[in-house]
Image (cartoon, rainbow, N blue to C red; front, side):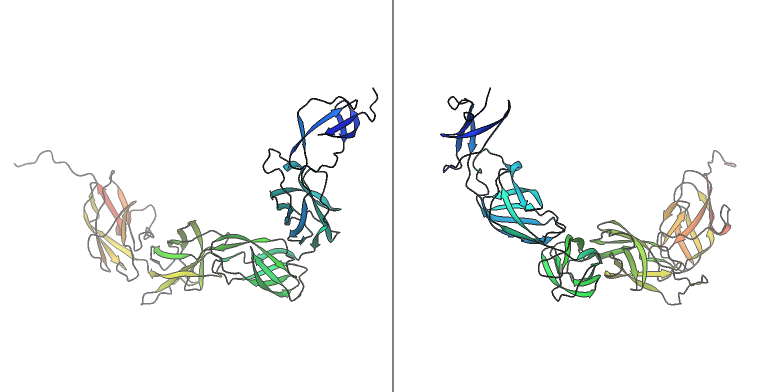
Length: 453
């Protein structure tokens, strides 16, 4: 069969020639129509007389137009979110026509990229990279074929290269001095830094460093930070973290021995883990010890030692304490309010009187020694093996009175004392029954008879 000028496509009452491709495909070009946004019956004919009977429709729409681009410039690496503003972007809003897969932006001589129509006057697409061309005409198509013809230009610029920032975090109140680290920086006199959408002045330091100060924000979290050497020509961003200022409520224990290593639990709010060597306890604003952030309200760290290089205590006859604060950003910000942490010299046990008692416990025992009633003590505790008890009356410097705890097995136990409830005195000789600090449990005797009666 010959397919000639009798092969036609009909758009309503208007007929146009069709090009036969194969038994499944024909091509024709739609004619002009002054009827828009209404379904037009579409049929085909092989003899220019009898048309197909299928119920198919073709839709005409008003020609879209682009007025401007926001922004109309972006870095040559691409990825700029561009808002197209114009008219007739969404002709099918009231119909069941989905042309999302046919909607594109064309950056002339560069690339075709997907576009998303927001409403009849707004659409969004992302700029492709362009390392040669400095500008490109942007057009829009709603059918992946016919583009607008408005010659609206998107400009490309070569941005400064931003690699890193130091520090990468700061409090929400702002004012943190941030150094932007990169390359190709120039002293243009127009340097700005942008934290999210807030622009602040920048200062040229060198070809690889720009200084800026973080602005105040209302809420913590990550924001993009970029730098520009000319108005609006920003680099690709890096992430900057805003955090709420930490607050200390209490610490425990609030005392420890002069050799340090007391595990202090700091209770408060707004504790966050920013990475290695960021969270620390700060003693007297000069001594820093690493801390572990447990959660938003708990942080743990160890007290520093007061022993000198020869192992002798630097404590004097007067009580010694440090003011404890914390930092979560490596020491740039030190936060409180400061809590007093007191030191004491480890006490010594010299005798246990009596040195034995029944396994049911409740034996009143006097622990003799010295250093039990130091001013720096905060939680005096006596331990029998693994069982801990508190003094039953006021402690003096040479004696502590306690009731022995109940145990299940008769045996010798080591008695130890801690003035902070945590760090107990050490056994004098390991795996030996030292008379100075040993209490012997025995089975309670059972009397079956007695004489004379």
